[in-house]
Figure 1 (cartoon, protein in one colour):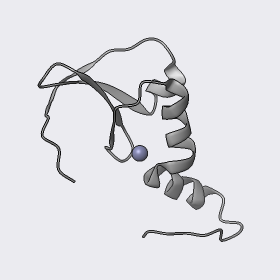
Figure 2 (spheres, helix red, strand yellow):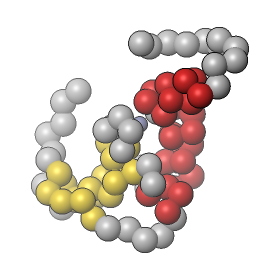
Figure 3 (cartoon, protein in one colour):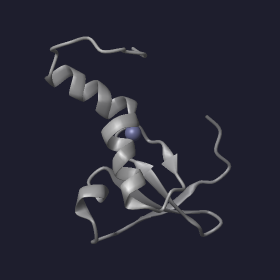
Length: 81
Ligand SMILES: [Zn+2]
């Protein structure tokens, strides 16, 4: 995974704690903002909170793995690790 930008600082956000529990709002070198998944470190350009929430709920590999650990009931199509 290659990223040209570096995180200058992590900004504080107070709105939507549900989303920001899982994401950092990062200020990048060319002064645009990116969301970073706290679990897996993936950067997202998406601004819509619903998109971010959907990511943690359904796509984040780390969060997914954790969920699988908790509820090891039925093996539904696992992919990695
Ligand atoms: Zn993630």
